[in-house]
Image (cartoon, one colour):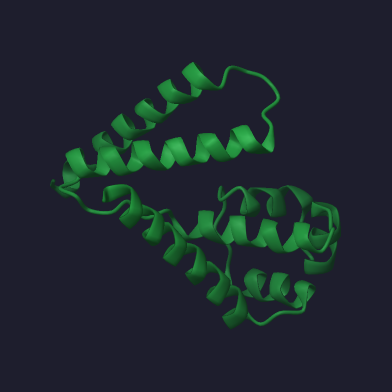
Length: 145
C-alpha cells in the first residue's frame, strides 16, 4: 500500500464500520453490554480489514483517542463530571469533552494541567495509555490466531 492510497483505505474501513453500526445498532439507547459487543465486533472488522487491505499491518488507534479514553476512565473512576475536570484543569467544558472523545489534540501545557487536576504525573498517565496499547495488541494477537 502506498501513502497516496491510505485515505481511500481509511474511507473503505469507515464505510465497513458504518454499515455494521447501521445494521446492528439502530438509533436506540445502547446498554453497556451491547456497547462492549459492538466494540469487539468493530475491533474484528478493523482486524480483518487490516489483514486484507493493509498488508497485515496492525491498525493502531490514534494517540489522542487512547488519551481521551484514559482520561475519561480516570475521571469516571473518581466520580467527577466533565465540568469538575475542566474547571480544575482550567480548560473549557467543550474542549475537555472533545479531548475525551479524541476529537482534539492537546498541548503539553494542557496535558500537564489535566494531570495536575487529577494529582498524577504525566509519566503515570502515559503508563496507563501504554497499558491500553498493550491490551489492544494482545486482543489483535488473539483475534488473528
